[in-house]
Image (cartoon, rainbow, N blue to C red):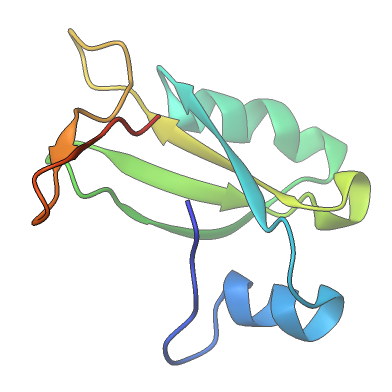
Length: 100
């Protein structure tokens, strides 16, 4: 995804101030976000920002891994009964966009 901060402080504005434009985060779809957070906490990797996804029932979390790997890792829970992929979206021009 291509993202741009619009207002306020966030991991996006902090990343731009520190690193400039570039790869901000990679997202991994997981079954249980909290299990990932609990696993990484003893390694000094802490949550930086979180929110709910566009699809009802989804939630995401940015983990502060910029120092370790050069970008942030995002984890998003997979909805039960799905493969975690975002469904195809029809844009106003009539073309389909298959998003991962």
